[in-house]
Length: 136
Image 1 (tube, rainbow, N blue to C red):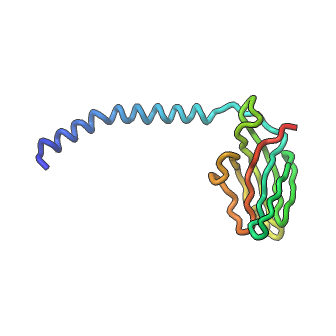
Image 2 (spheres, rainbow, N blue to C red):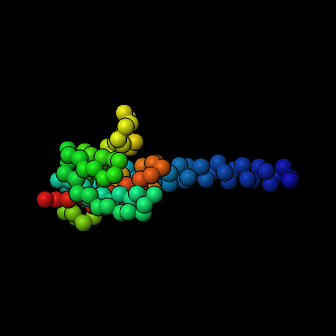
Image 3 (cartoon, rainbow, N blue to C red):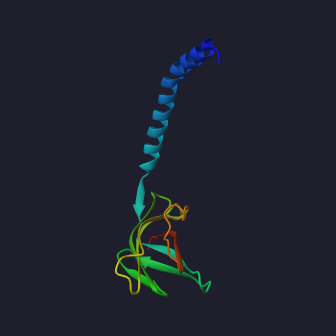
């Protein structure tokens, strides 16, 4: 490459850097605003459990602060949130899942109804995912 071409690329890159930084800053601000979506707490959560060995699917309704058992696992609902004014909208549920004979939970965290693979329970026998929040 000729030295003049390298100099031109370097100058254009320096001129583009402030624009790139401004675009990145605006994207970060927009994502922060979206992350602060107003939510309402549900009274519980509806989850679906799949036993991978038998293929049996079980739907559970779990009230916040209580547990429900299916097979060898127990699902405890800590909290369920959904977009304000839209109970049928996106559900975010905090769950603790334990298994018979194990001291530590096999899952503890937030699951998102529309993105179950985002924070899944990694278990050899069971899959559990959130369907929606319950409101009564």
